[in-house]
Length: 293
Image (cartoon, rainbow, N blue to C red; front, side, top):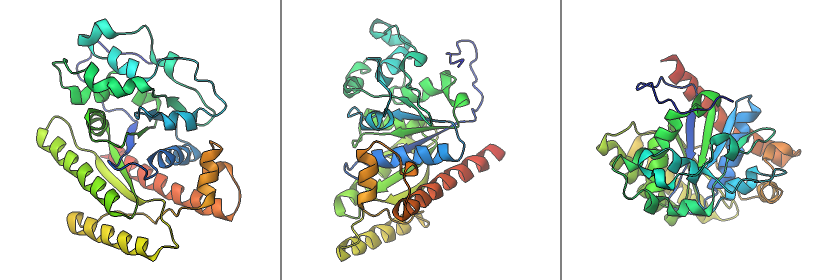
């Protein structure tokens, strides 16, 4: 596969691949299921996709590893530590090809509970700790091998999320139509503003806000959704909110069977497939626009 760390070149050319992350500080908004199906939608369009699980809970790893054994006890945590020269005493003898999980449609870099100790492990690093993931992706050849790296992040705003945001090109923000989720979106944007103020890297482009797990039977959710959309519009002018994903049995079934919605037939799944294909189309249009600049 030819993955390596480039020790000679100081200036690394812009790779073809793009990093897409799904984040919200509020948990329970369906980030993992969204990341899984967005990755499959991109793969369905012929793109080479790597899912990168950056949540210590490792739920995306469980979804992506259907029919495949997670043989290695190493994960993205070990690769990140190996990429930091100052942490040599903590390095483990493992490389990308020994950690990545091959699947028929998408590949996976799994997470593990060790990732919960990431912040403590890098506390003494003198180089920018916010850029460890970004530099790992830049120094490796991953982004020249894949069209997209799709990241599922934890429902926090700690150093892991800051690393994800600093490494991200395009951001998708799933949310539920409730006050807690709205606050989670607000907190996420505060972190984005802090990253912009630091000036250490380019802040990611918000590609879409995704209303998820919407209960169409509750009128109040419609009212709350309208409030959130209006708030986003006041803040950004163009909030880029896609059509809601309703909380239906079909999405629950696909998750329970560890399958994407593209592996099912029926009217309900056709609707979901179209929604995820729309998001994949937004992502690819944005990527192509960037490649032409």
